[in-house]
Length: 468
Image (cartoon, rainbow, N blue to C red; front, side, top):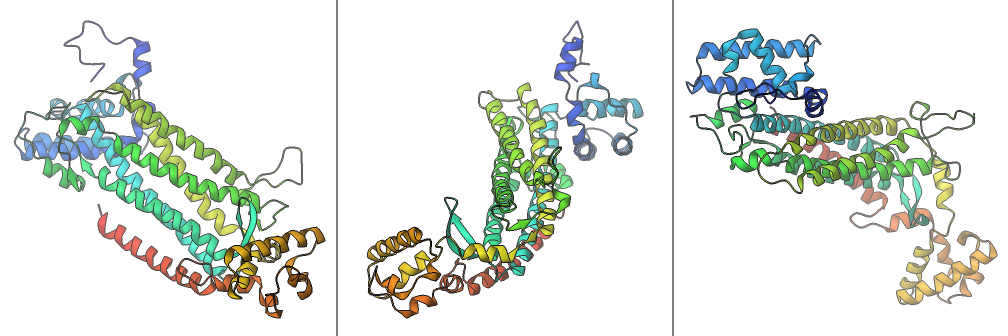
């Protein structure tokens, strides 16, 4: 215990130093992991004959009682004891006496902290994956409900081509699917048991690390004690995955904001996820979506902060690494809260299909289809592109949409145009994109079916692999 071990020191730590170094105000939330790790450690010590079975029993019972005290708000956290680990150990000694002093045998606070953080990170990853999958379910159901709704698609924020609204929702399904994959990969590196690494060199006791790993449900054991206590890659990796996921949600948020404006008027966000103005009574502000955009920068900041903290640290443990937790906790909390809000907010939005359909008729969205029409008539694509471009430019000057042009007007730009040019519609445009990944009705129906199958398999995989 940093502030209680007096063998080397003639003076105790200054109050300002204790206040500066204390972490109990945020690392208290590691308590269930600290207790679980300590129970597994105590059982192993007894199994190996390092402490007696009676001592181990007392330790386990005492730790379980402490866990109950914390859970029910009866535990007296002492800031002067610096962190959750010392608070729990001090309370254990207070409860059971000398046996409690033996718990720290064959471990250091360095590998203890690494263990607790990995246990927390493992739960965070699994919980986050679950929340992302829930949001994917919502997106798929929205897609299924709007598999014939046509909406203008954009590039450069300019109307580009008509697409199915279902295709739009499935695009975010794909993004979130990559987030799940990234977090799954992260989990394989989180799920490594570091206890037994000691301060940096391992421990000089006949311990059984595999026993502890099995007790705590770890898939693997760290192979290098120096790396095990100095490694925070798994936190950085989570924060990278979280940053990318928040970026995806921020992009969706931006479109919800745009689509809910009077200029677009494609959707209406439910009252329960909007706010009013303090002086303008007509306002209905998409605050939840705006907050998601803002919180994305917050998550990016935590990643950059930890990368900056770690970049110059020599091996092994340094107190700088205490700064890993606040940002990590905040990232986990922010991402989970954003996923939860988006899931229920999307379920409640009103989609104005008539406004979307009307929007798809404006802005010369069928120009590419007209160029493709000329290609089928024998022109090269470049020649067809040029002719259609001139046609659109002329139509703009006349204030006419393509659907209002006459055949004579079409033929000013190419003799290849025939009456069948009027068969080009937003529906035919969508139908024509009938290749894998396209927005055609048939393709989108297949994509919805594939997405549902993937989600079902994802749930089964999680249930099978992470029963612990």
